[in-house]
Image 1 (cartoon, helix red, strand yellow):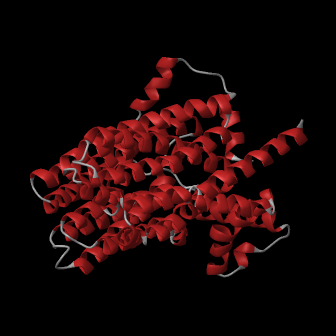
Image 2 (cartoon, rainbow, N blue to C red):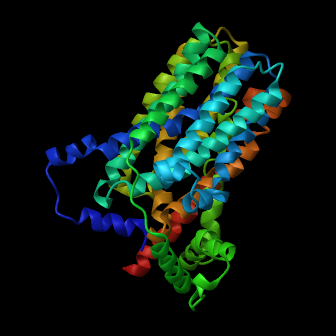
Length: 464
């Protein structure tokens, strides 16, 4: 049974009144996950676009800045240690806080220490220290994400998971605003070191939220072992005597192998097409993203203008795009909004190429920046919302967290790798050519959406 089946079951239940529905947002688990969503979103830009702006502002070469995109690869490979976070307990902390909260607070501590380390060095003097500190922040943040996903699912019943997801996403988006626009404002009025110290302080406050939270209930070791054995026997089609196998073989089977087997069993050879689509869908916007802030600065826009237009206004347009896409999914299903998002993301890179040509014509025009940013963030909101909805529908209810972690890792890995060469391409070819190439990277996603739509039509015709 897929997650879509679960959704149908949930929506078939007797509806409740609007007042009762709104009251769910006042429950402690929803409030906690909203605040922890802020904790999850805060470090992301601080090792990505905000960091690239700081490096460029300090005179670091664009080629070196481009290589910093590889720090983001840590988020793409979190599946490698996700089973450890899910299965193993931390000494001392587990006894004090429980399985989920102990891993969350360890991740938050690593983020805060990494941000503090970045704030006390100068990139031109100690670029290696900045790299190592950014890696610590990214690794700790990815670890926190894994634990938070499990915490969110286990903290509330199925009927409240919609409110939990909404709260988490809202907190995450607010954090992106703070670590983007907020950091730019602080850097403009003070300096980048003060900005990163401030972000570390906010992460310290998030640790108090983790202490305030309640540890969710877990299956006992015996219950989990029985469930693992039943699932492995079902997928393999024969008894595997899982409890008698060695510790490492047992955990490899249950944590890594079974989710892959189930996915390929369900989709057959077409599963490879789906995985290729997941890998290429975000190539265009990820490849462009690392050079966005250096581009704005090189065009002559001030940090306050970037914060106001690219961060604050862009944030609002992203929310609008997400809201609009939600309506489109309800009205037309998932594939038409997915196609719209793929086309728009590629097309908006052409607008960036056009904006780049204005550098030789005259002074920077904030109106043009606002138009391009509006189109980019609106399309990004549509594309990301449709894509997350599509990925969610691919998961099996017994492997939702693991399969989604696999999909999300694959979703960003190719784009992060390619974006590492973005600074080199700008230095050798210029911004207009770079954005044209970024637009062309969106073509495979458009073609694969067409393949998915054709298969879906064939499936529906067979069922009819």
